[in-house]
View: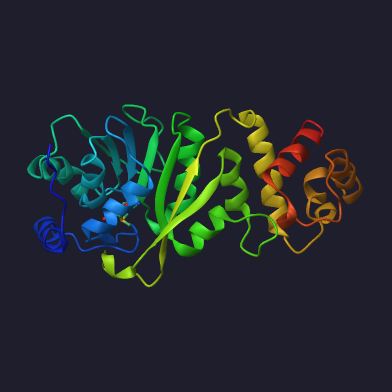
Length: 282
Ligand code: SAM
């Protein structure tokens, strides 16, 4: 099977044909360089016969590079014009029938994915990159790993470790599901239009066993939100609202083995989970 990838001229021709002017609101920066989409697919280590989900396929640059490996793709696109055109683009470029399924929907609202894909590969729309990643990890337990391209600052936050300035709620919530690692940079010049921020690739592997129940996750995330809401404050203070008083917060923290004088940015996801387990049931 030979799939031919899209170049800059193809992207502009398709956009003109569909009368699409990329919008900021939908984070539409299309990749116009075949080497870049191949690099993303390589970073994700996509194998033939794997099932991949892509969020925001746009005109299909990355989609075709994933399909080129022999993997199948479920692609979720919010822009109807793009979603409608994509199957034809795939057929025109040599993709066998049945290898691509397009879901014309807002990725933030999808609750089932045809084919239960195990790998996520995407050039994410910047405005929803973290919420959409967390939504996918929460909703689709069959997703085992992934590589996404996001704004550099977001990628660094997702992969940040405790103690760093950029460590925050996205870092802890993402770590709930497994480890994250930066996996390469992408030049601004490969996008149309050229964005005014840098992009990085970041990858994750879901832990083989879930860390805790859904109820534990929700309790842990509420504690994380409270801790980072007042990140300069000591935890006994920052969590006083959740636990009723700073004395009650200190007692919970101590029984979880966490110093009440620590700050939210010093704690690992394990620490947060232990605090949630030590907390009296609501
Ligand atoms: N994958 C294409 C590429 O690399 O050229 C396009 C990437 S572009 C950064 C983001 C894409 O996500 C656009 O096609 C946009 O329409 C789509 N998008 C934006 N918000 C979305 C959402 N909530 N659900 C699904 N797709 C969305």
